Image 1 (cartoon, helix red, strand yellow):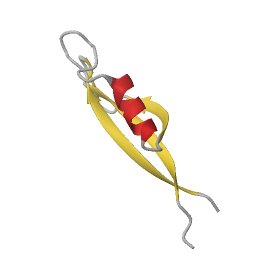
Image 2: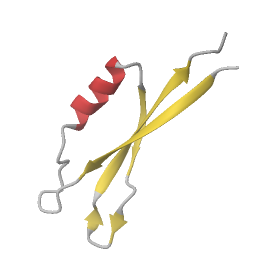
Image 3: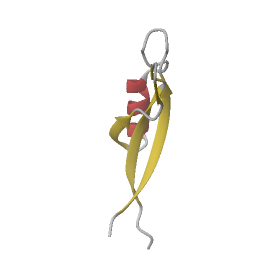
Image 4: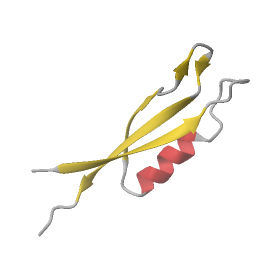
Length: 66
């Protein structure tokens, strides 16, 4: 049976510009180079004045134990 592990990386959103404070595409590519697959993003911090950040969710296969 294939097993997976997951990683969540938070990217802050500027309250002034509503843009990501970090280069999220670079983060996705860096994790991809390490074998992580980007699954989706989710806004974990929704407040009355908007989203405060997004979570980038990654997965990869856990190597089988021999």
